[in-house]
Structures are given as structure tokens and as C-alpha cells.
Length: 277
Ligand SMILES: [Zn+2]
Image 1 (cartoon, rainbow, N blue to C red):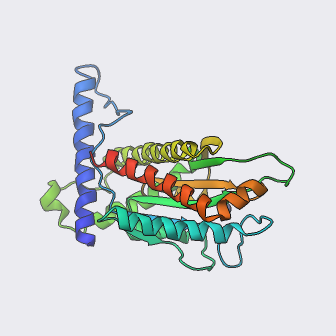
Image 2 (spheres, rainbow, N blue to C red):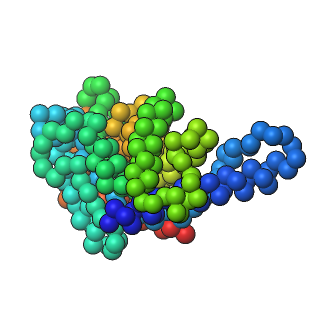
């Protein structure tokens, strides 16, 4: 399993290097000796085989409190049902959960689960809350990691890259060395690509929520510890406001949960189809 996944990531590496080489030579013919780093490297097919679902909070950390329920319980229910639907309707996709019960998981361990399992997507599921119950705030929003924390991804990406070295990389790569300073360009490209892919998935989630007439608060960039060390596309979606009784009731109801799960599933499926083209 690990071997196959390594080969997959190695393929992405090679494709990225090829893209860089190709774009550099085609964009700057005889212009200067400075290599041009493409802003948008050609997309390479990246199969979505492993998805980590991360229900926020748990155990002693209840998350946002509503009148009838706690955030930690709603997001766990939604994550478990979503995972079941993914495994049933997207054959070949493995779902891993950061928690399947009401237990406390430290923040840093959540993306670590995704890194360890070489996941293709990391999806953290939360509910929002306004400062006071009198606030009219409602609707969904999906967050991606902002630039301020992107530096922290470097270690995760490098760590994954060093694992790649276990697979006779010299035979496959003619001596490509991820520790070489010049390959930092490749890491930068991977990092930018993760960010672009994260925004793609987040936008799809917001689009799908809108089809259920949920108020769309948009895709936002934030410095989030839970996303910053994920070495893959990663989003945090807020299903609605616990501070708003109507939304709390919606998120607690079977009909509401089914709609939310269908929205998230549709977004993941659309993302997966596009990524694998
Ligand atoms: Zn939360």
C-alpha cells in the first residue's frame, strides 16, 4: 500500500519537475538566465484515494454550544455518515477518521494522521458560533490555510519527500535529491498547488451548500493550526451556526444532516473527478 502511494507521489514530483522545466524553457526563450517560476504549473492527474475526515473537538472539548447540542457531537455524526457514503458510493476510496468516538484529540495530531497515511485530502468538519446568541450570523463557510502559516507546511512536505527516498529513487529519478537547495523550487510548487487545490475544494463545498439554499459566507483564508501542517490539500468547513437556533435545529435534524452530507459528498466527488482527469 505504502509503496503504491509513494510511487503515486513520486509521479507527481516528476510531473512537476517536467512542468517546471517545460514552462521555464517555453515562457522565457533567450530572455534571461533567471529561471521563470510558473504561477500556474500544468495540472497533473492526482487520484483521490485516501480521504481523512476530521470531526472537530471531542471529549473535554465540546466546541460551540447550542441550546440543544454541542458542536463536537454534530460534527462527529456528520463525519461518520459522510465517510460511510464516500466508501459506499466512491469505490476505491479509503476513509480515515481522526476520531470515531467522543474523545479529545490534540490539534497537531489531526493533520499528522493525514500525513502518516499519505492522504490525498484532509477535511476538518466544524460548526460556527457567533459571540452572542442575539447575533443574526448564519450560513456556511469553508476555510483554507492563509499565507501566514504556509511556511509550516514546508516540514510536512519535506518529510513526505524524504519518505519517497526509500523507494530506490535513484533508479527512477537519475539522482534527484529532495535535500538539494534547487529542489526547494519543487517544494514551493507543491505548496502552491496544495493551496490552489484547497481553494478549489472549498469553493465546491460552498457552491453545493448554496444549492440547499444555505447562506453562503464564502471561502476564507485563515491561519489555522489544524490545516497548516497538512502536506496535502486541506480545508475546514463550518456547517452552520450553533448560536442560531434555526441552524442548530437544522444541523441536528436527520433531514438537515442528510442535506449537508449530500452537499459535501457532491463537492468531494466533483473535485475527485476533476483531479483525476
Ligand atoms: Zn469547531
